[in-house]
Length: 330
Image (tube, rainbow, N blue to C red; front, side, top):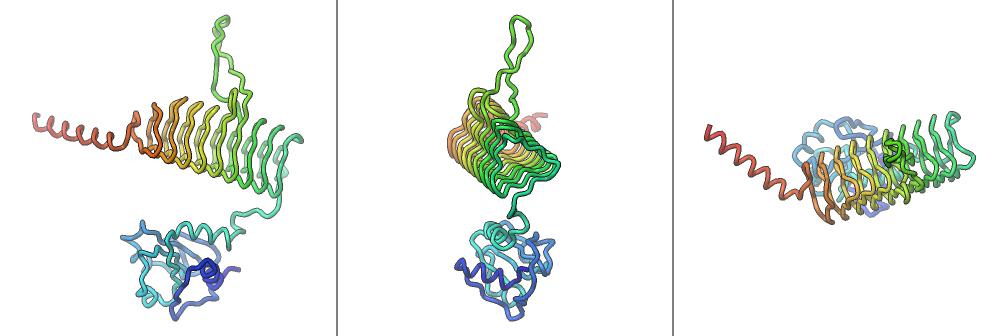
């Protein structure tokens, strides 16, 4: 059982001194993290700087007794006003809560032993590492390698020629390493024939993948998802794509064939990226964008077709001014 005292000790060990109010119950059991608007006595929560306009009301309306709070929002007056609450000032409350979960609440997410559900289908030619969890009705074909401490969700299909690294989380009902959509027209028969997909799929360490997502294998080279990439639900990634380290691809996005996305990129929900183009490092693709041309590093683009954000804002301003002018003439 984790208590308030355990959490205090964990933060103090990391060099975060904590001043307690005179009514704090250090023996209070803490069962799990919870959002501030739903947290009660046995929960731990956080308040980040995005709550700067509402944090006072949130504190007044919560029964939570353990709060990781942005250091710019914290004041010593809080200790007097909420004498039974432990306040833990933090430069990055959300990150500290994440580390706390990993350190003290491992039972929520961490698997300490291997587990293969009896309904899972695993080829004898597959190589499965240690402490791997394979959920119900998952299918793992031959010539697949799965690294240590990885998790394959229910109903997911891992096709042959796929390599999955260590500490990878694959959600439910994904198809990884299937043939891509690449066809050649046979001039003799006038029918479209599938171009051979002889490449594989490589998913490096610490990649997280949501549910109902498809990542195709390469045709003549591999599709590669580099270390630390996070991919949301309902994403399609076509053949021969490379996604750089620590990039995030958000729900309902489509990455067409042979796209190269750099490191630390953000592809916002419902974006589409045309085949064969390059997205530079540290670039943001805005919500619902249709990217038809390559984008350099350290840029933010948005719109359909996607253009640099400054250009899009200027265009919208001109359009608004023109509409206003037209309405005057009417």
